[in-house]
Length: 320
Image 1 (tube, one colour):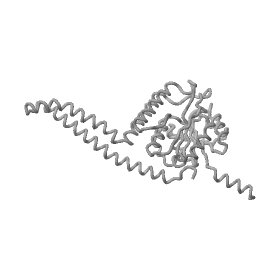
Image 2 (cartoon, rainbow, N blue to C red):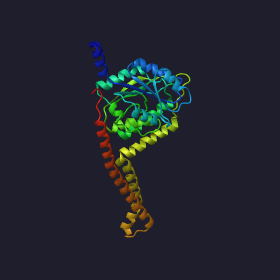
Image 3 (cartoon, helix red, strand yellow):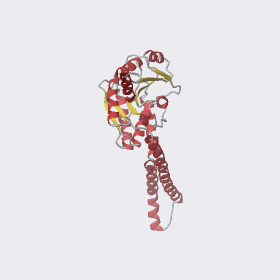
Image 4 (cartoon, helix red, strand yellow):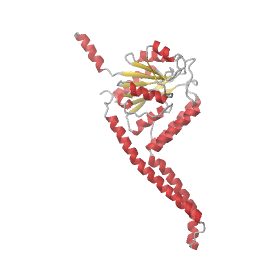
């Protein structure tokens, strides 16, 4: 090997390995355009298409476009993302959809910011004036769900449902993906917030789907699943606050029902309604039990968070 070849090999070895991950289900009309866009934007990246039981020609079109095609049989975007994160080895991961709606040209800018600032995730927030690209129902649902996450977990992202993200290796390999469907983006966002990871947002263009490509997102069904996940994460990650709400409810009900009994007892030294007194006592006990559950589970949650944090810190930061 001559000097020029050695220098070229050395330069190649210092470049981070980039993997583009494209989960797909019936995207034959758009997947080739998506692959071509990322190949132009990231010529050195490996492009993976994970097919999720497509009934059209997605697999054939993706292979002909030059992507590495694999299959995940368990239906649901969350299941596909979990499989991709487990199987693919890289330094930087670019997660996008296979429907050609996200701007591939923004990927180098997102990667540069991740490396320059040593971040673990950069979210591509969607910006568009096209009604067909970002329907009003989806906009409203995104704002409502983002507001819920902000209220529960504090300052958060402006677009928690964006499917366009760049990750470090230590994020991907320490993320315990549990979601099955479109709620995976919410789980990713909350995971980053709970571990206080360094993250950022980059505004990216968002386009309408090509002709023949149909959205798989159900506004109401998937919106309900995302909301349910947010509530589950609230219960799991914030047990004192979650069970504290029930404590306040039970104690307030007990106090409200017992006031009349208390005034009567102070006047007559008698308790005229024994069943109501028993009910008040039971509600107060439920409140105390609820608070105790919250405090106990908070200790468990803290231990789980410490374990996840240690697993995260055991991996190299981006650019190392």
